[in-house]
Picture (cartoon, helix red, strand yellow):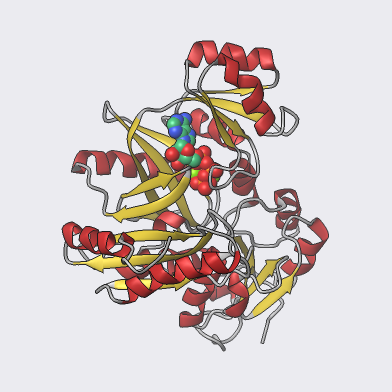
Length: 406
Ligand code: ATP
Ligand code: MG
Ligand code: MG
């Protein structure tokens, strides 16, 4: 029974006892990819109803949500209509129509996190300006609008130079590296020119990439998940190690930077803070995601409260859960498409078969209708009694058997 309600999602604000779980509030989620799917799985456990808005029939979340509205989360009218059936609106992707969310908020629709947060984050240049204003350590950056200004930036920042699209970036699509001044015009062209907005960042010679997931409740209190290390391949998250192998001092610094960054944003939910650890033991913020994140997949099996359950607790005004790990170590491996079509599924299946024979390994398959190269198709989390154990299990997972063909 979907309840159309504009009331705030606080359990206290509701009339009568919950009829279908921990709350009567229907959660509306913009986006129905793998993050939406895992949110629905956590919601299902607690008896929380989720409506999903996603244009793709058969999107990953569609098999587990209470209701799938087929439509675009970038279209104002569609989002407005969708909001009518939800008690609280949230996102599993930041590339949504934030202008409409802002208007809806003014009309009393409860968006968590707030539209202002989505607006700030979905434009990476605006995001950087915001965090810089709040004194968060960042790589140097500057907006570029002409070939002349990007050349000037290259002279100041040196090479390699990281050139980024302001908007619609994910999995490194939207980033390009210029090795020298001569590269600049082709790099700009590869990002579609200056029209859609570009900025550049000083190259960070990081020793590790770290991530901290911060959850914030509706009353503003926060809890932080243990610092993890993210290992990227071709700009795409490949492996996540929890906890990160860094000193306590670095863990504390990373957590402090992450918490401070999130406190500068508005609204409830979980937020992922991607960080660089430099050679000089500095922590710089790379970017924030206003939602559950790939670096928190492991929390499903390894933490007392997963990031997905935590996000629901936060936006629904329920008490936040314990973010700490209940196992000494976890490692997460993303299953990326290695080939198109049937051949891609065969390769992915081989990894899954091996995972099923590894102690402590859990397989997640997102059920995307099509497989493409470099597309996130699923992931495997291995939980175990020590870092060495989970790492050696990962080695086993990644060794192709002799009879398997590449
Ligand atoms: P996501 O899928 O996390 O949203 P994205 O497309 O927004 O990714 P970024 O997070 O900006 O891309 O960058 C992707 C990766 O590129 C980073 O994780 C890091 O490995 C590398 N990178 C980004 N910025 C820099 C920088 N200034 N210096 C060096 N490497 C960088
Ligand atoms: Mg990003
Ligand atoms: Mg990123």
